[in-house]
Image (cartoon, rainbow, N blue to C red; front, side, top):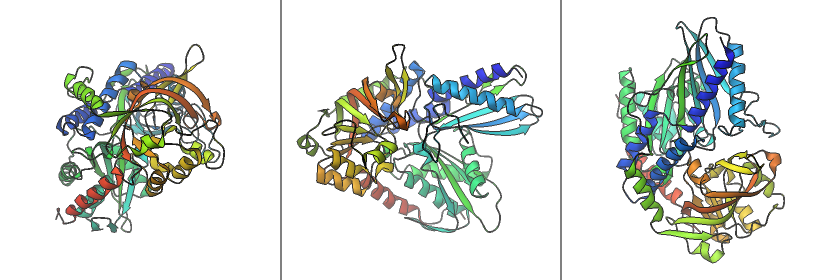
Length: 515
């Protein structure tokens, strides 16, 4: 094989996967946007999502700043040199990271040190399988941490909140899948896709679940029982009312694919791999001698070009201008206490990024900047230096906020922070602190990394770079940064309300369906 050409082909696959959603995913998102009730927060979110896809297409930049853990599944003819292929993929990963197509995400689990190039023990994931065909089949999925953290595995029989007992049968499996959608809420950047693996052991069950995510969203399961189950889940999961970003709404799930394998008598696992709306998976067929791409996968059916869709663009423009409250940072307590759940705000001025490492640091150290009246953004951006050596933001959507629950309230009170921006909401400790201190939680649109990068007009500085680019504290000057108030200073939480109402709806699916 021409290994240089193969490396070039892998680089093309990585860039395309990170920046351009496949056709089947685009069609699912467009259908969801068209059936959502006009004027709702979910409709606004879906319009923002379609705008973000359009911007990623135009700029060839990451759709979402969390490019996740790259996972390759490769089928090779007998005799292919898998050692050389693995090395070529690693080189392509490092180059794509250097070029800002991937965020440096490989972190030493013991020291917390970021490798800077997405290479390290176990990263990227590369799984080989031999087959008797005469070409190489390479598939790649970029699955971010927000949706990865909402994966879940059930051991049957078990008791499920809202659904009661799930037994070792098709109906028990049905209950597990419905519960998996409920428990994800908006934290996995809904509306999302799920892959389900029935059987196996704990590790092979998850592998089977993730393997389902490589299926086309439009295919039909050849197993009649699983086909019926997939159709049932798609119809009924969307009755839970969780909606896009967990704001409530008509669409919670965009796809469901289920696979099955044998198990041992003592174990019965149902494993669910959750994937966000930014469903970044593509594949190529590669010539085993030249190393060149023969064909691209997931190209069947209509191609939705959101740049040409004027209807969705008009919806996004209308939603963005309706009843928006402008806030200039630093923000006063009086301004914060005037906000209520459901308000849409636009922020101008400074905001400071802070993720896991920053929150832990601030809990025991002074802040490198004055945060009184300021905004903390739960974000790990993709950053590159320009020709003048200045930092530029390439992608900057929100990360899942609930990870900061142990720290958030204390840090807000300690430093006088007035607003926190993230996705998926936070818990009772933070809600109590917002009420006591006079703070607000703002939910940005998860995955909309290009949309928000466009709001960032300059990088004014950076601190704590020892934690790596995603975890550093970036000082960002923004204009028109739009988000929704989902937790206010009066003790109200949209996330808690949606969780409660969706649990009540989930309980309606307690009775047996499949015999």
